[in-house]
Image (cartoon, protein in one colour):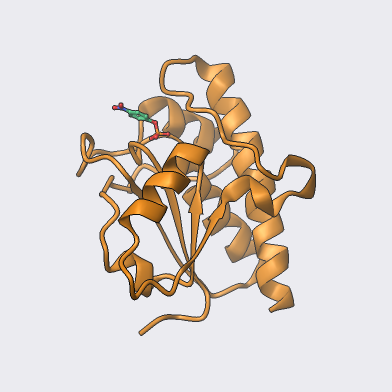
Length: 156
Ligand code: 4NP
């Protein structure tokens, strides 16, 4: 069954950006009293079963969000009917998702930053080869998008 409000965040490895997006959105949804199924996944399979990157865990913790229990998984075909919305963290992820989507896909595919009018069309940069400041920037971007998503879902 497709829950009317079920969201999946997708990046490449599912250890940096999409776990931060998942954590930020879980926290924002909880604050707003919004009941919604939330998950994240990667288009790539290198990190399946791994916890989020320690730098991502640290950044989330700085904002009071615990993402240590998350484990990476790869996007699967069933995701395209299980979730109502799938948010790609960057353009390459979006292109990969469009390619992977089965013909019976029902999920709405979007670029995460399209939730923010001022940042529409932008990608969330991969912080994997960066430093703590890059993870802080990622948090800023995904948490702003998470707040916008909560507002949108509350409106219905
Ligand atoms: P993410 O970052 O897509 O934000 O999780 C990456 C993590 C790992 C790799 C690439 C990006 N990797 O190539 O292993």
